[in-house]
Length: 87
Image 1 (cartoon, helix red, strand yellow):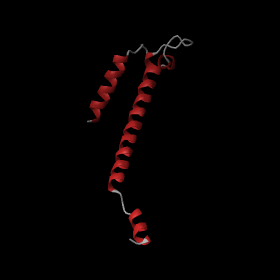
Image 2: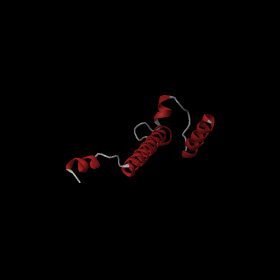
Image 3: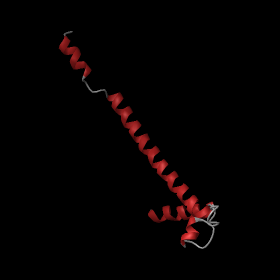
């Protein structure tokens, strides 16, 4: 084998590695999407469910967005209704 043929072998595509990278990229995008959903759920909890010590009400109630204290079941129901409306 010559030095040129050894060099050529290095640069041949590696299908297994490429598929593996695609799998990693797909998993990474799924983790990012799940992370975004977790942040949105926390924001809903923070603004609609949790009573703040200084405000004595939720930020949504203080801003006039809602007039009642929400429970997590209300958040889940709202999210399910939103998902069903998208399909």
